[in-house]
Amino acid sequence: MTEIARQIAKDLLDINAVTLSPKAPFTWASGIQAPIYTDNRRTIAFPAVRTHIADGLAAYIKANFPEATVIAGVATAGIPHAAIVADKLGLPMSYVRSKPKDHGTGQQIEGQILATDKVVLIDDLISTGGSVLGAAKAVQRSGAEVLGVLGIFSYELPDSTENFAKAELSLHTLTNYSTLIQLANENHDIDQDELDSLRQWRKDPWHWQPAQTK
Image 1 (cartoon, rainbow, N blue to C red):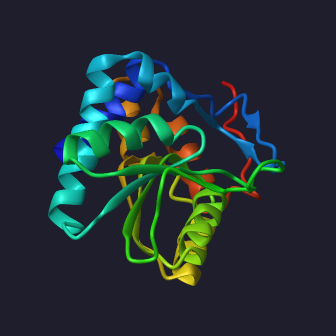
Image 2: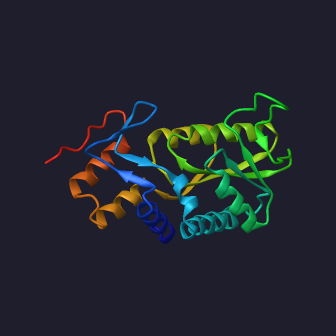
């Protein structure tokens, strides 16, 4: 567990961007019963948290993708973070819609990405990876190279690992589900039984059963 992973996990818990509820789960749009709900859009309202995220993303890009020529945000939640990171790095910024506009020129990419560009994509949350991988395909159709995908938080679901492997794209997030639930346990926000239940959900979300209320 790295220092930045612990810091961002702490930030998300402190500002209630993440809610853990292993005994009364949420139902996601996919139908999955989930013991966690995440709203990382809250992070933009907290300057210190916003800065921790931007500094972490920028440092990773400098160390791992020094050849990057464009920082691109995935609409909508990745846009503000991409803008801040691009400004820190002095690089052009663009963003990618979930689908082309149904009017005007029908663009899916806003800003400018050229066929010669090397792009880092930024999103706020990775569940199965569907939305950000769709954005990656749009960038690749422009002829540009996607160097990798960065995010704030990942649920570490088996589907996301499989989907990124199929797409032959790398994924890095500042923090993740394992780190966050471990920290929540250390802070006594959840007990050991709840921690065990949360770990089981990550391994097999489709067949998971909520923790029993004592």
